[in-house]
Image (cartoon, rainbow, N blue to C red; front, side, top):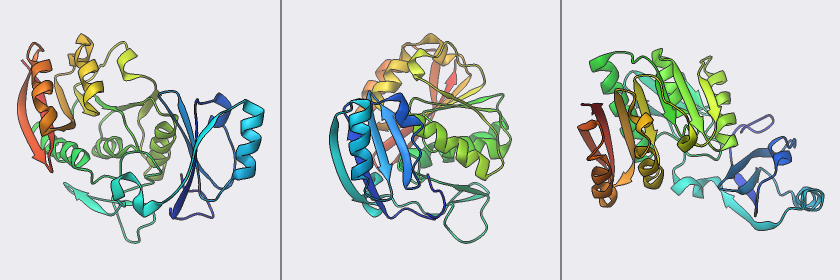
Length: 267
């Protein structure tokens, strides 16, 4: 995340370890952007090179450094440089943009700069949902990333529950809520292990494999509505097949740049 004196991202200095370590979560360094941990892999991101610090950490924590890399911010995240965008009545922008916006956010290095086709699908369907049905009784943002969907629904006034397995996503979402004086309940954990999903609406902008795993959990379908995305047209047949025996119907389908999203409704 951005902390003084840094006001925007220029270059990422990346150090990836074969496995994560609890002490890396609490690492303090003035040039640290964040610590990413997922699928057993730990990755540190810095604004500047940190060879001496990394050598110390490797020796102290018995880590195995697998990757060191330098990536310009313009090349990160499919080269999707964050920029202002609008959803419904809200103007949204990364925090370094000048001007007046309804929501600002620090994208950090996690997914969620707001304009990826799957994110925009879920945001647009969310706004239409709100216009047609009003405020749902509880919204789950599964795989919250930078928290864009959480911010949007919290701004509308919903009670939002946000979940991600990546500790950096949790920190970034909390920070973005603070930047906008908004609140949500946030949990770090594996979505596949959650005991239940209370509320009325689930937002699940996830990769295909995780969606298919969640479809196997009957409790996933407890809420009345689901807005799902994260799969392409080529993956759609598998998604539809997995939903055939579930207590939902596809009420709306949206396609954008080869990506697809559904609004599901209980039947």
